[in-house]
Amino acid sequence: MPSLSDILTHLGEDREQYFQAVAPPVIQSSNFVFPDLVAFRKVFADELQNHVYSRGNNPTVEILRKKLAALEGTEDALVFSSGAGAIAAAVIGNVQAGDHIVCQKSPYSWTTALLRKFLTRFGVEHTFVDGTDVDNIRAAIRPNTRVLFLESPNTMTFDCQDLAACAALAKENDLVTIIDNSYCSPIYQNPAAFGIDIVVHSGTKYLNGHSDVVVGVLCASKQMVKKIFESELMTLGGILGPHDAALVIRGLRTLPLRLQRSDESARALIEKLEHHPKVAQIWHPFHHSFPQLELAKKQMRGCGGLFSVQFKTESAEQMENFVHRLKRFLMAVSWGGHESLIMPSIGFYHIPGKPEPSLPWTFCRFYIGLEDPDWLWEDLEQALEAL
Ligand SMILES: *Cc1c(COP(=O)(O)O)cnc(C)c1O
Image (cartoon, rainbow, N blue to C red; front, side):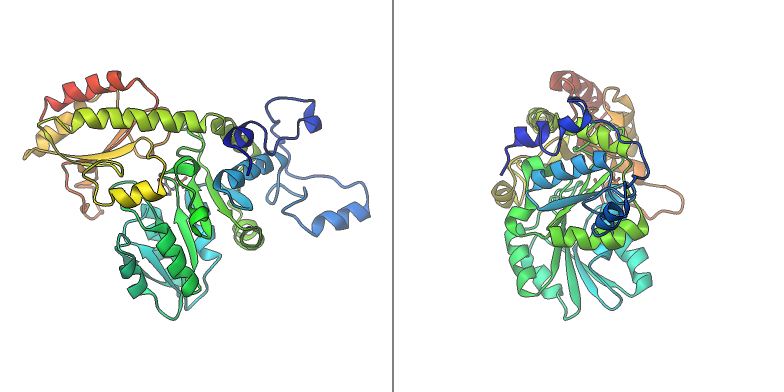
């Protein structure tokens, strides 16, 4: 097993190929030439390992793939043009018409859409279950179940699934297990070590980490990666370009530093928030009040910058004032970049054509970036006066 430092600084980089440059070049080329027919025939035998055409494999993208596989401790990895693309490829690659998927009940919204709106059109059924209890998952398995989809923790309320128990259950029932590991990143959780088959990420979040690339990652065995490459990646074509790949490689150099900073700052802010009279509840997997604290500590090494808070107020107007008074927290979706964010549930209320959210309007998700936590607290403290 290469060390984290080795993976982030050296692995996959072949500097003799490019003038001993420290930073790998962006091989901005759609296709690659062959000196003769012998070489031509040879490379077509395996488009994943060779360089034929950049929808398949590109040298800059390949460096990134090698690092990501090593980070998750899997044999190989693929990258996609978005996390949603990686999730769709992982799921679609393992089902056919008539199959059934069991999924934990509150995954990322577009994962829900993939199962509900997209795959039902092709005769693939699904059941959402409360995955905090593995017995619920067991009870939902049918003879035609093929895939167990996990997201642990999820990114709003941080519900966890017991990865070792889920992997064992899946083996007994011949299911492919897929987990969305975006919340932890490979720094804080490696699901493959618990026996999970496919680990997917929205690399848009921590892996790139600078809020300037949308990217998806899929880590699995050589055999699984080859299968998904030859079908979903090459057919649907949701690839990552070399320029974006180079940006993600650059982002990875500081991955552990960024995670550690966000993790520590989030805990520092939680310590202040939990004593504030206007705070009703805090959601964070390592918080003493978290119902699955023991499980979270068993399978995760840390949490990163996300947590949620429910505030004490009867007034929606006060809630809106609180949100508007924040100046150093930016209001936005996504997370995992350098900048701290707030995503207030109240923003999802009264949107024309959309159902009202299940989370109360007093609920806010925070993401803590790389800024000084004291500077962030000053902002929160003055905004809390609105409540
Ligand atoms: C953002 C996100 C996704 C989707 O990733 P994109 O890169 O935006 O397509 C999937 N899962 C989780 C948990 C996310 O936060």
